[in-house]
Image (cartoon, rainbow, N blue to C red):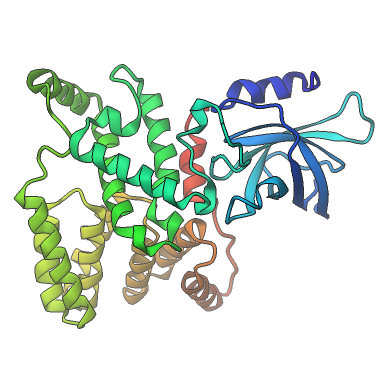
Length: 374
């Protein structure tokens, strides 16, 4: 375990959760540096919530994606497999023909089935919903903070946290709790949308120096200023308008849905969900399509990871005879949800019409997270 060199030491310094020296059986699949398929059974040298280190018979490229199957966790987790990015790789100085590989998970979590993990592992849920009850409990805890806590408490930072720390915490939470990552659990959707709205508002307030100073001043003056303090009849009325708007949408009564959703968006101007649903209704009526574009843009400004809004926006651009703009949003849908058959089919149709294939761009989430200091 002394082996690791400068690269391994750099990885250790950059890890964001406590490292344990554990040998956990591991199956690895992917492609080597030459593009050949690889599949091997090995064991970890060290583990944490963000990745692991192991010996491999294959030389793999840095930033390549691998699929890991963690044999030791199969009994306790629903999801047995997960994706991991190669953070670093180097030849073993002691064992000829072997490489030491450090990988970082796409989504951090206690995937190792450690019964009594280090304290800083507690905030990371097991990917794939392995601990569904624990994940639901965490959602409720954060929603309670959204009602009765401060922005700092919701984001899990202190009042003296730097902007970089606030940003890192927000994107960690967004990566764990965004509704698009839990499409298989529809019962969580409404609560996750509420949570993301609160997280986004907290981040936008604390990330901007002027708004943060104003917020801190309110905290100092009142001593009891909370996220939920202003959740009055206005927000309850917005939810009622939303429900009526959805009923009209289901009945294809677009005039009615526009009326109710316009009211909801006016009451809650910082809600991505309201703007996206209003834009969807407006897009059906030709004379309102320019307004629909504005609301889609606002929805995605508030929540750039809203795959549903990207897909509906792309459909609107196709209606407006702007396929090159539609293509960008379809690609973003696939970056967020690679299994979205509708976006894939529309992209194929656009590429066929234009007579040239186009490669999907790098994940929007990956681009956002790559800018966060580790």
